[in-house]
Amino acid sequence: MSFGADEEILQDFLVEAGEILEQLSEQLVELESRPDDSDLLNAIFRGFHTVKGGAGFFQLNELVECCHIAENVFDILRKGERRVDSELMDVVLEALDTVNSMFGQVRERTDITPATPELLGALARLAEPAGAAP
Image (cartoon, rainbow, N blue to C red):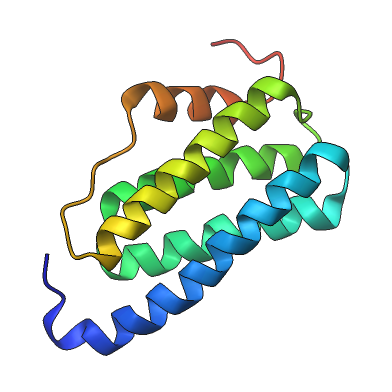
């Protein structure tokens, strides 16, 4: 995987996204004890949104897809259409692990291993309002 003339921009993305991913990890731990904290939900939403935007610039579609669906989960949470529970936390933490893995592959300039269909499906279900028909 080569980024050619965009290498300097990629370096900026790697630094910024790396910091955001570290923050997301800390924020998700906080979320378990503060599931109704709207500022925290907004911050997590923005984190996934920002990483998605940078990944989109570099056409890292696998990373964009996973971040986009995770972002949608937090949009539903921000709107109060679903509540944080243990299943949601398990899936979101798995999604963050997957995003971190993909991010590492970008840093190493290796091909990105996409998120599993099972993870993407679980995220998509959680991105629907609670009680919505499947």
